[in-house]
Length: 410
Image 1 (cartoon, rainbow, N blue to C red):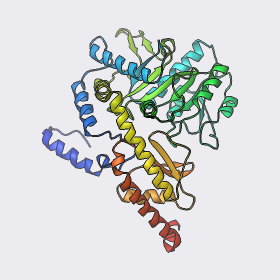
Image 2: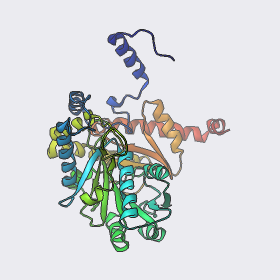
Image 3: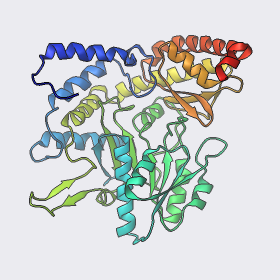
Image 4: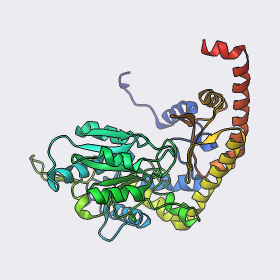
């Protein structure tokens, strides 16, 4: 379509936008377990009002907007504190997990080139369960990706990763947790490998960074996964996931300022004056920074602990329910993600039946299974989900027994 010759009044446009949104998933009803993190209307209000207060301000200009610089520094400081960073650690807010991972890889690449004088093609070594954002960044930077099969426990195989790493390896990766299964890799053992071989270890805690510390505070048996493991050089942790902040906001964190320095872009080769940017973006929306600061201060430790207690209670309830229906939980999830499979029925068909009932969730392909990323609100609808899942399973089983199966797969 071409741009209209004349503008349309806002009320008309608003009604059309609302009408278009009627076909979207109804995440406020709790039937969405991917893409959106529903921490309740109180948090949603803080997100929106804080975002709009600074929606026109630009994080590119700290001299013009010292308020945003101060808020970013405080958000990063809270993240570093939660994740056991040592004195002198540093980081920045980015637009999301992919941005954080890309910038960590950029820093590790430049470190490998400048500090270790590694020439030729570089590579990263990561488990098969690691996020594709690493592959995306590798394509941009022409870095070889070496994915290593996970072990029988669905966790990264540290010994195999060590064998895959060589003198050209700029980074090894562990997840806390990985997205497909919601499992925390053995970061302590990866840290030992990193220290023994002089490797940069990045922990992808995009999902877990702002939930795992609070689950541990609530009594959860969370293994060391962050900067308390000495071999960890950098981390990614998304504010807009279990930090319940507005999209898009993540943090990329480094053990030292010297490591972070390799991330910084600094250019003076044009007539517009020197430009320095910490992350991939130039302009950075002030609203995302402001909303992150507001939500973290609104909830505080007590608020996050309460919200995450609801998440883990929902996960445990659903785990028990799906086991009763004959599903197997993949691994031992400890946070807000879980995946489960079934030996006798088609999980993809079950997903389809759930979709017909208004549920929008994710899937795993290795093995074929159902996947949930839970929010606090899901505790209120866990019984509904389990009832709908039981009905979906019954429908699929009935179809597999009769002519419907032949028709379906013909």
